[in-house]
Image 1 (cartoon, rainbow, N blue to C red):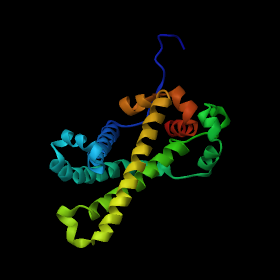
Image 2 (cartoon, rainbow, N blue to C red):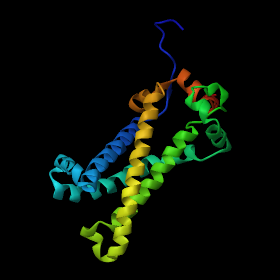
Image 3 (cartoon, rainbow, N blue to C red):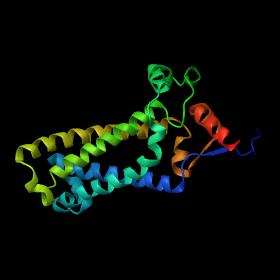
Image 4 (cartoon, rainbow, N blue to C red):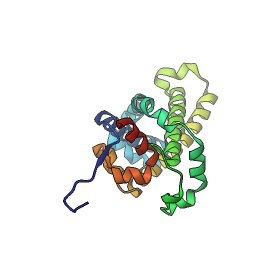
Length: 212
């Protein structure tokens, strides 16, 4: 290929999927900031981003409701690509080769590798836990449906799940930046055929068979 030739591109995400992905990401950030402002007095200054303490307390759960809907829209088209297989177990077993950038030693990967699938399912379950516990402690509408003891447990579980999902989100962002070319797919919707051949060869073969 000459320096002036454009590399072959593979469509990875539609425009609607990318928009929804970034809406979901923004909601996670807003939830993290507003939640941290209520988590510790030392972080209360973050509430100024949302108009003060009372406004933050009022808007935080609604961010959660919109997040649930936004993530559900992502979940439906991608769940079938994130079902666990034997290849994923083998991929995890060779995690040293993954971290060492020796992908040639791994089995061919489909649309998502095992690490991406773990992020997908961690996000799924943590969002469900956060939503369920959030409903329990949303006193404006659900105070009379649960006891004080149940609310205390829900607050603890909600806080632990929040810390966990922030850690998963950071891992997701780091991986997207670490694997060169990934961000192009998330921003533009396309990746090069070379990138696909290296990181998701089985998926590329599936696409090629479909075109034939």
